[in-house]
Image (cartoon, rainbow, N blue to C red):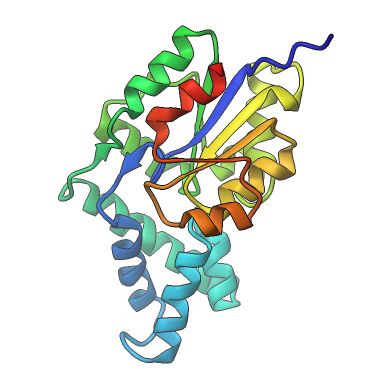
Length: 226
């Protein structure tokens, strides 16, 4: 009989393991203004809706879709990263209750843990430093480390390759967005769970194909061990 016990847990950061006080939307507003999107009106509202719908995806990919121009997208992405990094110091960045304990419990049980994000490597590192989480997980990955961000499978598969997982069915993915669910499914993960502490609702997560929906990351170790 094949061993299907979970070897690797791939966890999203903002909205899943980290409460960032709405920094993504606040930083987006600054980036949108820098990109020349009017402060009010249908274009700005459409952009806000797109950012909410695509929460969890690589931010440069979001700006490419919104602006349709590589130079403008790169400039907007740079403005977003600068705004987010500056806001980190002025905002109560905190773990989702029970997140650090859940990650520690997983590792104590022999499950490898990777933390992934749609942010740049530099922004992810700033977030990890603000939380004191630099050494909390076995691996941290940004889209630039993997090739493509969500909804593609690259982040999950890169984690599996770097950490030596035996089979994709032995991976469990947890995230708060439909993009997280799409990534886990595309990678063939055995568990692709949604959590209700972030951007998307239970209905959205289930419609995207989540195998489970949890109240928070604190429930994740029990799901894996069960």
